[in-house]
Image 1 (cartoon, helix red, strand yellow):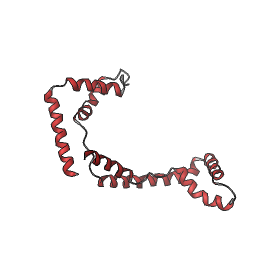
Image 2 (tube, helix red, strand yellow):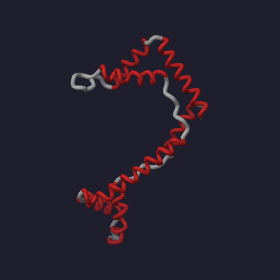
Image 3 (cartoon, one colour):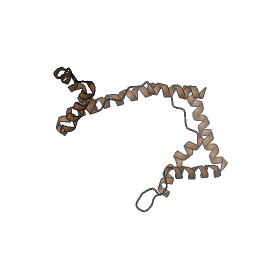
Image 4 (cartoon, rainbow, N blue to C red):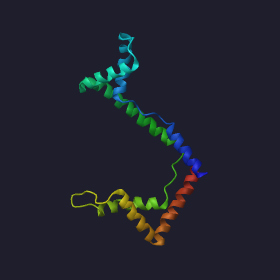
Length: 160
């Protein structure tokens, strides 16, 4: 039953608003009709090649209207996506171990930096260290995470 909920949420996410096109695609939408009128015998692949070559030759100032159109479309998309995601059923809460890793992430990041501020360990290595800590963790501390998880699951089931 839980798997159905997770699968349903994922499928609903896919049905959300589509990401906007790139500036180049906005340019193609603008130029293609004129190119088709002036060259009716030109095939689609040739047309794409010509538009691509012309795009590469354009200066940044010439590309700016299409970039602005893309930025505007991106803003509209972000708002629509946020509104859509707010209507979706709630996301299933992470397990107790994941909550522990999130709590410890900053500490591990600080402890595992060299003098230059670079990470000494990879994310995989830090996660492995967290696994070892979790295995050796006091049962009372684990109980805190387990109870928190059970409470979150209960809330999630009620909301769903």
